[in-house]
Length: 294
Image (cartoon, rainbow, N blue to C red; front, side, top):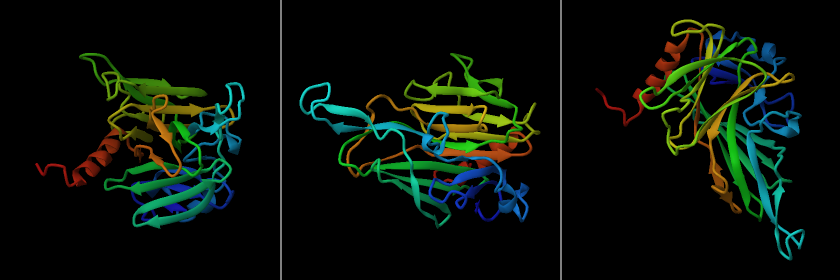
């Protein structure tokens, strides 16, 4: 399926049929107007990644959900009744629903063995951006500790450069570029708020992209606290951008029935450079009721 269906702004092709017992795969992400009428058939053979990366799919890059269950023990290594950590750390979610709630695409899944539920939401915004988030629910009787919950989106194999930011006092938001290679590039914000060296966003694109030229995909985490941005690729899997909240040890412990929602992750694609990325985000900001008219 193509989302959003109106074919404007940033869009994605979601494969819900090839492996119906696993999380859907995003086969393609980019400018919707670049898709032809037979896009689903043509792109069905393209690679891609699920919005939540799982090792159970045979992927061994950084997983989208990192956490484990704390189960009551029976004297194993720590005396009678000692808790046992490290349970249910590798999930295998199976989809149960895929539907639209107004303009929001909702993917619902469950891992009954792990006692977890997952709800993924994707919304198309004024200006042409998408925003995506995960909501994780503990359905088990024992606590589940969440170490990380991140959204992933694919980028084309042809993309050659990554732009992000660094800085210090009086030199904030200094741009820096890197060639896209195999491995994991991570930028973390640990100051409790975006600091002087905050990465702000990751922008991946074609070689030499600039303000008014080049294909680009940008990803930003809509959180004012600690956050993490990542780009990863290995020899067997295509490149992807990832983002979420940077959680401290023990910060999120879900008891039975409790849920944790990741921050919204904003994704914007353009075929004419960075100015179009900025225009899409500014248009969305101006559409908000709280934005001043002048």
